[in-house]
Image 1 (spheres, rainbow, N blue to C red):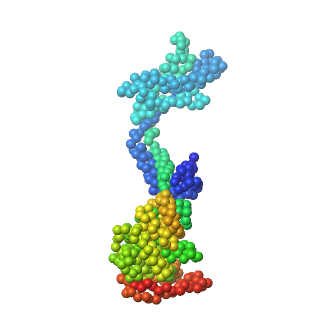
Image 2 (cartoon, helix red, strand yellow; image 1 turned 45 degrees about the vertical axis):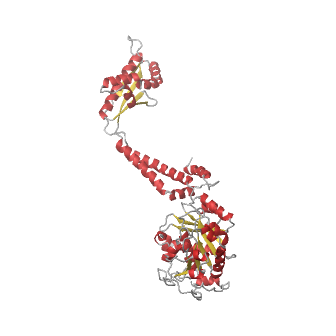
Length: 533
């Protein structure tokens, strides 16, 4: 039974993988993803082999060959043949005599030095050469000289015992005689340990152990590790896959810092997939949530907002995560006044909106309320969503996890669509299924999911291809990279938002690709920016 077949049977019992058939390619993918386990098993096998080679004392083997023959009186040929057959028939008996306790006791007595009969037996191995009358006895010992001495003494005592057994009448010679054909000599090199054999065997066993451990861990691992696994758990399309890139770790706004990197391109793909869903239905308000904490929801919200703005969309980000707000921190915006004040009917929402680099408007969370769920369920929230839906092309809402609090469940039925953020290797399939069930329970429309922090091999080929596309302008927004430039050119200024006014929409010159794509449909009527934004 092969390793893949074992994994296949194990995976069939794993939660979230019912009826899944595992192909050899998927086994290779598993080993590639868990290469550390394979390498660890390989190194462990090598370490054990080296340890055995170093710690096991050397053992020497000395062999003695004994010839067994039957007496043929008078030179009778027929009697000689009959005697030879007799000797051959008794070879198995002679092997038992050679390894008997009686012979071993006599050898121990002759050798002295405190060696016992059982120790002698442990050192002896005997065999016969097929179709011959030769017996070979091999003695293993830590001393080459003592190994040869024990072997020669063993042959001597065996010959004496055979003569005694095969001579029932003292007046007649024995029927069968045993003589030493080749005496044992002290060996010059040890038979154990064998460094090359031990290391090779250790590497093979370690590799097999590492592969088995990797497949076992994968069979027992219930976390989401692939697009197909996520699609089955959520029963909705996977809209985007965001890699666990150094750009995201160093700069959470990777779309701005490296607009030609593979992470920025992944958010463009997420934007394109969301826009393809919006062909017939206008999903202007989109809620992003997750099954648990620390799954990359806020980072996805902010970069998706930049990607939407880069395509010429008027975007508003609402920070509705009152438990652990982070969106305002990523944008560098003050949250003294924000959504909490708006929902409490203390201020109008327009003055609370901050303009960020003339690209994205942000409504921060504001002061932390004592009752977030009750505050979000107020009719004021419905009026706010209606107002921003009419004034913006896209409204992206950052919300807390579904499995932790009920805030996202309160907001989900009030928006046009929900995107579930799932972290690779952390979110379990059961957690994703429970989050999906929670959304469907409140009649929310699940547009799809995003798999974040995906680990995998990246040799820089994608980044090199994107960075070498000189003369190509990916989008028409403020983070577009102009030909011959390697860094984005911001379209606005840092700092506080401008004073309350109703400025005309900023018109970004479209690229040829965008003009060709929109030539067959009328342009949407521009909507004014919110006052105070």
